[in-house]
Amino acid sequence: MTINRRLAGGAVVGVTGLAAFGIIAVVVLIMASIIAGGWETLTWDFLTSVPKEGMTEGGIFPAIVGTMLLVIIMSIAGVPVGTITAVYLSEYASQTSLLARGIRFAVNTLAGVPAIVFGLFGLGFFVQVVGAGMDDLFSTGGELRWGQPNILWASMTMALLTLPVVIVSVEEAIKAVPAELRAASLALGATKWQTIWKIVLPNSLTGILTGGILAVSRGAGEVAPILFTGAAYFLPHLPESLSDQFMELGYHVYIMATQSTNVDATLGIQYATTLVLLLLTFLLNFSAIFLRSRVRARQVS
Image 1 (tube, rainbow, N blue to C red):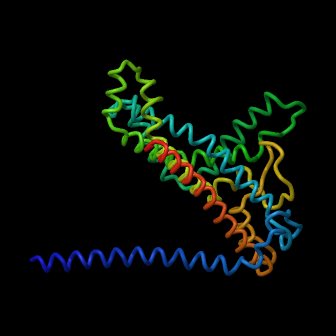
Image 2 (image 1 turned 60 degrees about the vertical axis):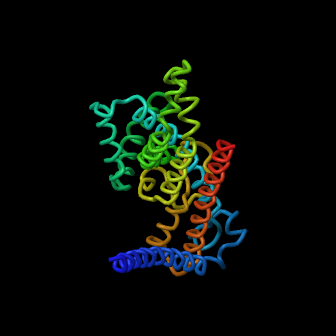
Image 3 (image 1 turned 30 degrees about the vertical axis):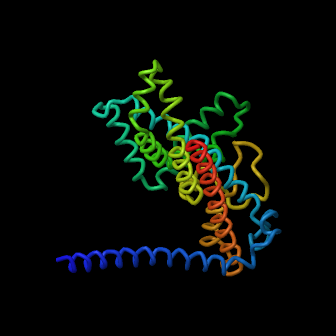
């Protein structure tokens, strides 16, 4: 019996290890293919210059800046709302209340909605309703400024897309805070809000940062939600305000791969742009991970 158990255990370890190795091998092959295809094109001039007409020459600097702005605005809009929602669900709402159940149902539903649906919603709500309403209130002479695709509405759409990820991550981090800490704070005379602000949130800060990291990872590579809400194919200049359209790395690769008049001539640019997108995503993730580790080390000390 013991030998059979050992054999079964060894077989499980072998199968799971082989599956993990297969996943790592696929990732390595993909990265190697992208690096091999785009390494020669990836120059300093490519990173710092603007694209030229025809998109077979020039660089991707506006797309890099546009992607970073999209991620930053998306995080500013989505992470606080997701954190507040998670605090309400875990600290204030009754787990059996209809409101809490409705919120959880909405979060689970949003997590399963296809990304293209978010893009259509952003076009219909942010652009045609909110933006058009702002133009009616603030613009003069019928000027169309906010009632058109721009970086703000694209960022807000992406914030909605990543909201379920943030809510679930932060809620799990808040639940991991020991109940004894809450009880001790309340026993010393602190109010419910003071306990949340001084005890719960600081001890779950690493989980909040984890939610932000996951949101960045999800949002940086999504293309479908920004198709209709703000991304442009050829803009050889940087956005000057939140009401301007912008270039984005993922959208840039998609258009060049599907609608370019000369795909072979732009193949190196496609690989190099993909490599830059991956490196930018890794950089943002590593920065958030470094910040999270510093916060965790400070809490331990």
